[in-house]
Image (cartoon, rainbow, N blue to C red; front, top):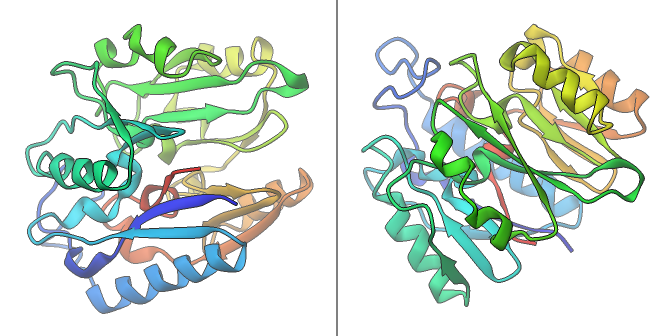
Length: 274
C-alpha cells in the first residue's frame, strides 16, 4: 500500500512571493475553498487505496502544506530539505521532528547547499528492467552542489543520478514540469528544460515522454501523482487526460486551483513515504 504524507492547510495562504505564481496583493486566496479542495484530494487518494499520514500545519508557515519539499524518503531514512528562501526554512525543524517521532533516521550530507526535497528529486521507472534513475532538478531552488553531491549514491545505491537543469522560472521545481510514471513513461513539459536533456531522456534513458501542451502545463498537469495505473492530475487538463489514457493510464482530475496560486498542485501537496 502506498503511503503519502500531507499537511492540513489550516494555515495555508499566499502572504509573500517566492515564485512567479504568488501574487498576494492581486490574487487573494480562498482559504475555505482550499480546505475543501485538500479534503477532496485526500479522499481521492483514499479511494485509490492510499494511506494518508497528516502532519499538522504551523502558524506563519503557509507553504508547509506542500510536503513534497520536506525531503526525500527511502525506507526508514530521510534526507531533510534545506530550503532556499527564509520564509520556508523553519519548516525543516517541524518536519524533522515528525520523522524522528515516527522512527526515521535523518540523513544529512548536504551541508549548507539549498535542496528542496522531492520537489526537485524524482525517481524514474526505467523501461525494460533497467536500474532506476534519480532525477534531480537544479538552479531555481536546489543548488548544483547539492544535486551532484556523492551522498546520493550512498542514499540510493541502486539508482543512477541524473541532474536536470530547469530553465523557466514558472516551473521552478522539477515536479512542476516532469512526472515519471511507470514502464518508462513520463509526463513532461519540454520548454522547461534544455533541448539536449529532452533528447537524452528519450534516446539514452529510453523514456516515452508524454509531452504536455503549455495550456495544461500552466495548470500544473505534470504535478501529478501516480498510483499504480491511475494518475491524479489537476482538473481542467483535458489534453493531458487524453495523453494518459492513450498510454494506458486512468486519469483522475481533482480541483486544486487555490494551491496553484502558490505555485503547487497535487504532487506538491504530497510526499511519498512508501
